Length: 415
Image: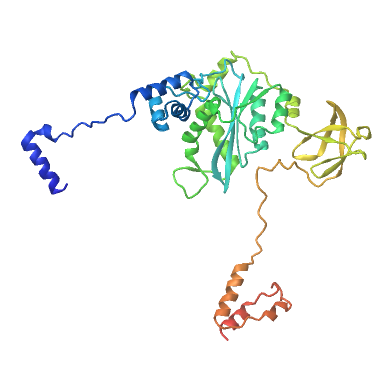
């Protein structure tokens, strides 16, 4: 503190004691007349859809003057007059829970750790009634194939839900998922964009996965204190162990029961009805529609197939396994119309059916091109002449065109 401030405080203490040191109460006179604020509030109550800017325009038109829009907005906040643009009160989302198992599954994808130099993604489906993880699968891509790898085992072991609730991600709006749900009689529901409130249960599950499972996993061998995972197969095995041993058997904070016990109690001792293997196989086939040419051939992703001549000019459905485009079933108006005989096959898998593991890298050639350039540059700086004519000399055994031998490089460095 400065000396004049201390002297001023001492004089105030000597003259008036402690009360003289208290800062004086601020006397602020309202700059906006109370009647104007009352009129603005009346205009807002008269038409709740009016914004502060619109109320200011009405005041200027009627009285020739208006407070600032921010002043009116603060005044409306104090009076709790702010509503939605249409005048309706804010939306209220009630708590919802399915009344029985398999009434509704909620699906979503979680961004996982980097394993083996590649990012991983977790597809998961949770039963809304019991909070049981019905299906799950880690993969290296957030696509339809990895989604099918999570959903198919779930349907085979947990049964078919009445409804599946997902967001609008690319994998969840794919035509394959719509066809699979239609074959199994499942109602597929997508959430409204910008309103994720209905997926709160699976988002809470993903938070638990991050805090209890992913916190113990790493793909970096140099990181200590975590389990080093080398592949997505090991990651799926560890996640299955955690889900079945920890998550499914621990009491859930909302239901008061372990998810596995609540799931079993919902079926009252009976087993859930499982789909037939043939029906499940049919649901996970892909299909595309094509028009048969006049030559009784049909094209699919660069491949050409011969079909029954009676289908020429008709629009048919091609049903196939995305990983085997050599075997395609032809259907017309929902009836089987034979097999499509491969005529020209250039692609054996669907473009979206990417393998889970990348192709192994090509063997290294052992040629350090930039090292050769650097050596040539150093030779030029040392004063040795670079023989460009040597680029046309026939190479020796194991030598590339223009590549110097060790003896030639030493001779140029020490002429």
